[in-house]
Image (cartoon, rainbow, N blue to C red; front, side, top):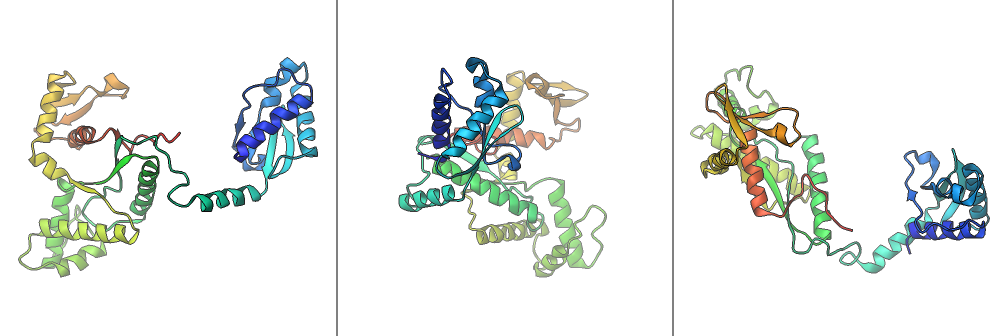
Length: 320
């Protein structure tokens, strides 16, 4: 029995000893928002006061005193707060007990569930632009995303870790131009990349190399190296430009038109996102015929839904 169940049983037993009838079948036990209020708290005195014909604070005090006389296992303090909340403070011994259970069960057995068996999920994370090294924010996202993926796996899901490579657009052109400028010893310009790494990479770049393709490969190699040093591995590196070349973006727009999900105004194509809770409609294709960043995103999410049952970036694993 875990410590939470132990506390609930102790509260119900104490209520019975205090003559509260009927003893509630359900006892709410929650983590206090303020750690100074203890490790667990219950509002059972407030919930039971009317049926018991007693003041909530008085009942809470009686409950606290009773539980303090013979504390449940691992409890080192019980007190009453506010209108009648009963707070519990735990000794570290309950953590020691959990660790013993973990060791006894082994890494393959402890905390493993089967609620996700037969369900596939794509967890997309990091997805940094291939225009430079990863930074600390990417590192945090990498660790967080991989932890989410591991939780899904622990619950039995079939997980694909995916890195979305935003390898087209203005930022890639500016990146390539910056490498070429540094290699030639000229200024990168206001819209260029000014990091020290541009100087170093330009020095590495062969004279006959295509700055766009060479720089793209160099950035991805840097990303892979850092992620591998963190023992984070991806099953899929999804290229945006490959998706566009495949015709997936155009096909998505055709299907959106057929579904009545878009309309044209001022020469642009707009997504009826306000029909689904957005504060306004969004432009998918600008008046000059160029897609906004959102159009490939829509096509990409459509692609993911076609490959998995769930998208892990926006939904938590169902492990209970």
